[in-house]
Length: 237
Length: 109
Length: 110
Image 1 (cartoon, each protein chain N blue to C red):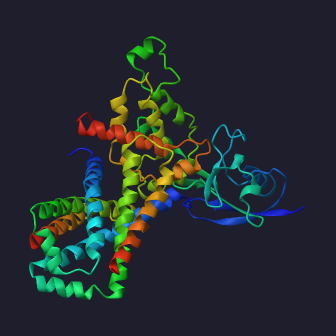
Image 2 (cartoon, chains in turn green, cyan, red; image 1 turned 120 degrees about the vertical axis):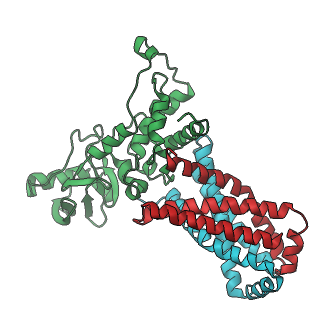
C-alpha cells in the first residue's frame, strides 16, 4: 500500500510542522487524513469537525496554503508527489494544532449588525417576498453562508487590517439590507460604514475564489459600498 | 490564495499607484522649470536619451494601467454587479499596452 | 468628523472620478506631443493659448494631490506597521507638497 506524507501544524501560534505517514486510500479526503493521524498515530492532535459531509462548515483548514473544507477536499486533488501540508485557518488565533479560536470571526458578524431586526409589520403578519423580486434575488445570492471562515482566512485585507469586518460579516449584512422583513436598514448600514467597514475592501475577490458554497462576497460588499455611499452623501448615516 | 486574476489586478493597481505617487513630485518640479524656458529645454534635451525615453515609456504604461484598472474598480464599486468584470482586467491591460505601444511609435516620428 | 475612513474613501473615489477623464486627456496630449520631440516653446505655445489649459491642469493637481495622499496612506497602513496619527500628518504633508509643486508648475505654464 502506498503512503502519503502528511505534514500537520502542531502547537499554537508558536509551533512546527510534524510529518506523519498515512496509508493512501481511494476517495480519501483531507479530513480522513487528519482523523487517521488522531486515531492511529497521535491522539493528542486537536482539530474540529462535525458533519463530515459539507454541511456544518467546522472542518475548514489551510491545505497546501489554501483555505478549504477538509471534508470536501479529495487528497488526490491537492497532494503533490504524495505530500499534503495541513495548517489551521489563517487570520485567526490558533488554540491548538488545527483548531482556531473562531470567536473573533463570529463577533464581527455581530459588529456588522449581521442579525435580523424584524420590522413591526413583519412581526405581525407573514411578509410576501416574491422570488423574482430583485432585492430578494440579491439576498438569495448570499444567504447560503454557513460561517465556515474560509473567506475570512483567504482575505488579505483581514490580514493587513485585523479590525476589518471581513467578507462573511459584510455578506451577512448585505442579505439583511435586502430583506423586506428587516426593520433596521439604516442601522445595518451604520454598522458597516464604521472605520473598518465595507469601504476597506479592495476587491481582491479571494473570498469569492475560495467560498466552498460559491457565494461572491465581493459582489455583496460592492452593493454595500453603493448603499453606504448614497446614505453618506445624503447625510443619512 | 493569491493566484487569481483579480488579485494580480489589485497588485498591478497598487504598485503602479505607488510608483506614480512617487514620480509625481519629480514631474511637477520639472514642469516648474518652465518658469525659465531654458532650464526646461535643458531637461527635455537630457530626457531625449534612449534610457530616459524607456523610463518614460514605463511611466506612460503605469499611468495607463492605473487609469484603466481604476475605471474597472469604479465600475465594480459604483455600477450594478456584472460577472463580466473579470474580462475587464484583460481589456484594461490591453488598452494600457496599446497606449504604451502608441507612445513608442510616436516617439520615433 | 464621524467615520473618517469612510469619508477618506469617498474623497478617494471622488477624486478618481475627476482624474479619469483628465488622465485620458493627459495620455492623449502625451501621444500627440511626443512626436517630433518635446521643447519648452512647443509646450508653452500650447498651454498659453487659453486659460482653459492652466485651469484644467489646476484641477488635475488638486485631484491628484488628494488621490495620491489618500492612496499612499492606505498602502502604508496595510503594508507597514505605521498606523498612528503621525502617518496622517505625513500623508497630509505629502498632499500639500504636491499641491504646492503643482500650483508652481501650473503658474509656470500659464
